[in-house]
Image 1 (cartoon, helix red, strand yellow):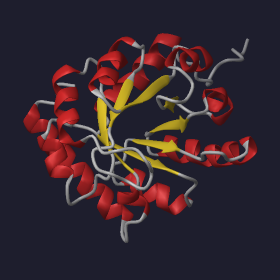
Image 2 (spheres, rainbow, N blue to C red):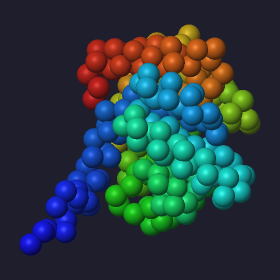
Image 3 (cartoon, rainbow, N blue to C red):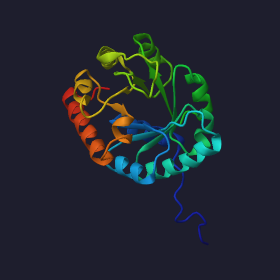
Image 4 (cartoon, rainbow, N blue to C red):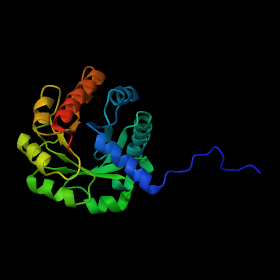
Length: 232
């Protein structure tokens, strides 16, 4: 008798899916946040070392988000990168995303977790010591600290500077990423403040050579992280 399941890979048990995603998150160093981008751009930056990519399409119709998400998910998987959806926990499953990122004014962490389940990643933006402290007990898998520098991607949000990065490095109980105006000219000082992971937007989306920019950013933050011991 022929075994009908012969040659078919069994799905990973739930705990293995969770562990695999969290291990990749723990090892991540370079996180890209962007709106819909061409395939060649995504292949270039993910191939050069971006570990996560977040699709951020504020205010876009659901069908437009899901169309873009299908491409992002496929390309991220090809490069063994994590794919995160911004601010839409309700679309994570149909988008095929590995998780969701929410801000302080978006869905709560509890609501996001309820929507995406325990096997997907939930990330949170933080802008103060109090929010950094709260993130550890909120059930997030990672949080972002910033904006370190003022940035047009967050109009009206004052820069927090390097001091909050230092605070997060000393107190974080889950992985954290520094975010906000970080590029090849200042990534060294951000890493020097204790960040072993960074989020970038314009440093890659407006770069003349996104592939080389991604490679340079990852090299700098990784080498600094090794010297710092990559404690978080």
